[in-house]
Length: 350
Image 1: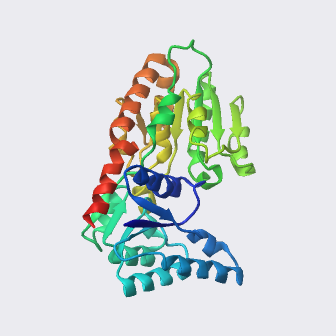
Image 2: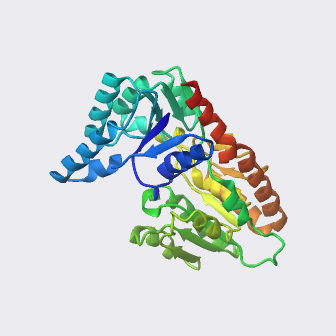
Image 3: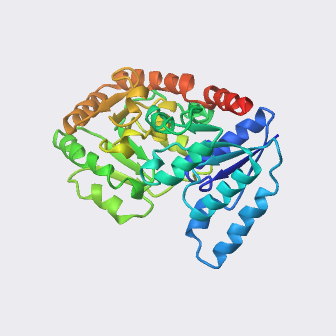
């Protein structure tokens, strides 16, 4: 049996990196045969004619390598109508087993294709309880498999709390231009923290040379801010190396609307895996991961953001306690060692 992965982008993007490329690698370790087909769905969507025709033909050719008894694994493959029509036609004619995976509430913006693949699938894998509720309208065989990380490289860069206290670093890591609606949550918070004469540096990783990201924070008087445009994201140690310099990891996020209610966050797990304490907006799946004042802090208002960051800035022991408990949370519930048996069970059940 071969598991044939089709995904929406390459491994520089977190979702396919963790739920296609890393899952395929982990399955190989467990004795499964896997292959990841190209072109990726976004490549088809973004390529103009007539070059698009060549990519479509490449997809069709790849389907001839799928044998009876193999499994087709579609990871968020909803971004091209051409791929959609080809894959639906193929599955309808040849009746191959298919797993459909999505880790964001993509049905909010791509309802029809997400619904259709969910109906056709022999199993649906989602990331949060809210996504599972939606998928169960169309398929009874729905499994919640949260996005996972390989905790080993993160634990290699565990925050060292024995070092002498220095100016604390509040850090954010992500794709800045994609979070222009979320990052402004921090602006009034930092203004108030600076006015209180609290000493800290803000490090934003993932500005991608976008002036809109720079302008959010550069004009806050007396804020010590540093920007890092991008990391070598295909290097599994690039993020942990950066995160372990943080003293507090922040995840500002809007919470209103169906998209946000069904969301989760990988960067929360990355911070926690390095034993860095987190302050996170109360959105989506976060209350299921973060237990307030146990393994991190949730914040639902500007006042709560200011209060929780202030507590952490002033208390080194509190940062250590929350950071270490957060690391254990990831180790016990969100590492590949925990998640992969669920994936193996789903595959074997088919």
